[in-house]
Amino acid sequence: MTRRRVLVTGASAGIGRALATVYAREGWDLILTARRKAPLDALAADLAAETGCDARVFLADLAEEGAVTGLVDRIVDLGLTVDGLVNNAGFSRTEGFLHTDPDAQQAMIRVMLTAPVALSRALVPGMVERGFGRVLNVASLAGRMPATGGDTLYGPIKSFLIKASQGLWLEMQGTGVHVTALCPGYTLTEFHDVNGTREEVSSAYPAWMWQTADHVARVGWQACEANRPQVTPGIMNNLMAGLAKHLPDRMALSMVGGHAKRLKRI
Image 1 (cartoon, rainbow, N blue to C red):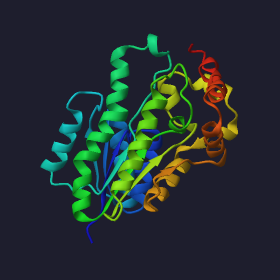
Image 2 (image 1 turned 180 degrees about the horizontal axis):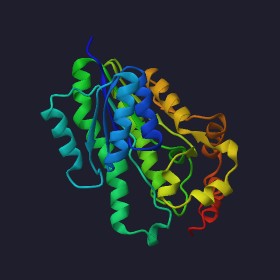
Image 3 (image 1 turned 45 degrees about the vertical axis):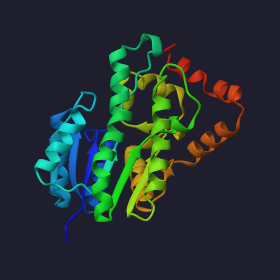
Image 4 (image 1 turned 135 degrees about the vertical axis):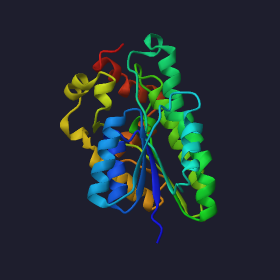
């Protein structure tokens, strides 16, 4: 039986790395992509040795124009069939809207909004034709909450990804293609090191709010296999999102308004 193959973006660390590990252990071959070669090569070698999977490494910076087209073209040129897509690559900027470099803002939009749409549009038709596919979009609890200042674009981008996943889930009914938006809360990864908020968030939020990347990845994989349109790991994360949804706008915004102040960004 031909093995399935999944493309994981942002696979060099954190939730992306954990998801690649879950898929490999579940019998999938891999295409791992990110900007950094060394951690991808190390992950590919480790997973190949552990699981016997075929793990390919394709370097790509999804913030660059033409990166998605180049990535898809390389996959096609090698004759690889992609049965699963994990749109995980992402980052945030917490300096505030007016203090963030416009190029960085455009890069956020390309990596976390444009690239997932373009990759899905390129790869999902083949999944439908073959009658099997998996699309797992890594969104965020922030996409279910009121917007916050400081990381002003992050929540709205993740909200878009959730809604787009739900719409595609509806369209894919009966095709054999599953679509899920994974909405993790605070997760122990390099994410907060990259945006420079590790010290602030570690002291501002209690330990019970944090989850591991391995746990989040396993929850996401299971939800996608079950064809759930959305999953948020953690009872408290779901309670907070539910509370925010039913509060009046002003009260909900006030509830999350201290986020940027805790990060000392605005």
